[in-house]
Image (cartoon, rainbow, N blue to C red; front, side):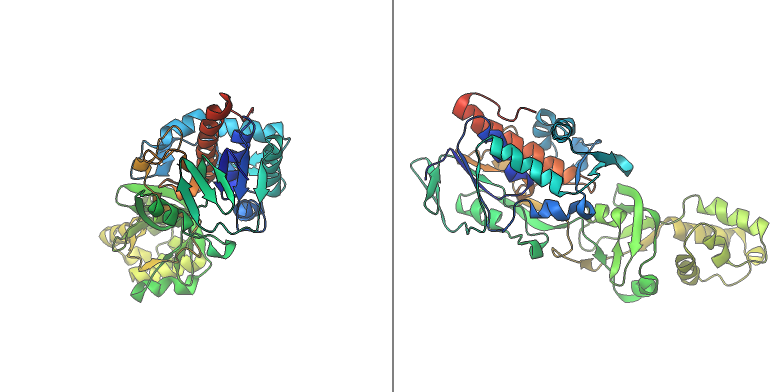
Length: 396
């Protein structure tokens, strides 16, 4: 069969790209080895899909070229996608930090994308092996099908149990496109040696400020039997490199809190002072780590200030991460220098596009990676649609 575009991958980016191009009269085929479209969407956000973030802006993304995301995000923003969600009558709510979730199920987002694909006459072929990709005389071939446009929307290798692979990088290599070394991102960190002191408080969570170099996130951290997790740690993991230390502030204004506790309860011990602000098990572990055993009234202000310094800069040197199996996304990917920031088309290979997680663009935790999927998918879909009919496609 001949098409105007073949899209590899039936995830968020691929489906919205297909719908956009299809609604501009392009004949589109979506191919995916999965048995169901949008499988990663379905498990996201605890099954309710954190589908975008009201605070989306370029600073919320990592890339070798931090400016690359600007064009796509501006031309199809979080508010554009929100308008599509509202047009389909999907109820949603805002959680902390601008995160938007479905009131019902993540399946509503998948159903919406499939409905938009139907509007564009898109053909979706699931449980299909992609096989070899050919390219000759300006046309790409996938199996027995061909098209002048090929869109790589196969994502990255994060969450392999969902069928994720690094196929996008092999395709990039086939067509001479460079790849920024992929690595797990938004992923728990592992600890070793004496830093496993906190293994005994596995399951304890508390608000922290996590910092690496000059990057900091103020959210919750979770102590696990392997190391550190929770939103603050997942966020900072995208910026962390092996060998670097991570600093946690577990108690802000610690000096003031400890000196006040000394005045109020001089016969109490450090654990009691910490337990006023922290979970009991964490307070006990921190008191043991600091090692002040005297009553507060018998501790000098200098000793308390030193304890406060530990509480505001509790440092860890992670041994690594929990890998792609636990990573929400993949950092790195197809080098943005190879692509047009306006259309996602490869500069050296006309008709070849890369979108979503396959590209070296990684968002923060909280709906940003979905917004990149939507924005980059629409950018490619519009480029294909304009070339076909002069129209932009997606109407909402």
